Image (cartoon, rainbow, N blue to C red):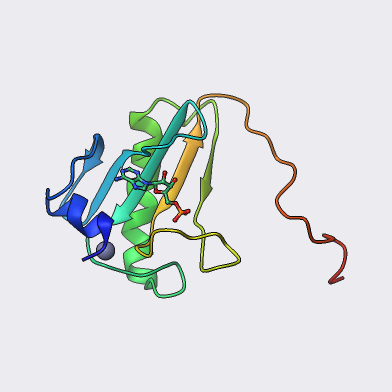
Length: 118
Ligand code: AMP
Ligand code: ZN
């Protein structure tokens, strides 16, 4: 079982900020911003590549509610999901990083020439 499924099953601890029957949101153990929440579906979906539009429909509302719960909906935030090797996905259970609480950097994302493909 993957580590996020273990968190869902209460086999691993987490610091939950919001939860319903289908989704869960908890603090990232290694935060990259003053607010860094992970939002996940309770069903095991490997990544954004596999998620269905119907799951995303409710997940969208859930993430909006997480931003409100954390008080960052007005100040602004970033939603990120890493997919696969090039996306630097470490945990193979779909999760959205919700980052905020400060002005976020938007700069160096790769050593490859960003203009190389166009
Ligand atoms: P990713 O690289 O997109 O797969 O991100 C995985 C994220 O999960 C990283 O930001 C980790 O800090 C976070 N993480 C890993 N294990 C835990 C855990 N047990 N509780 C909370 N966050 C975790
Ligand atoms: Zn899982």
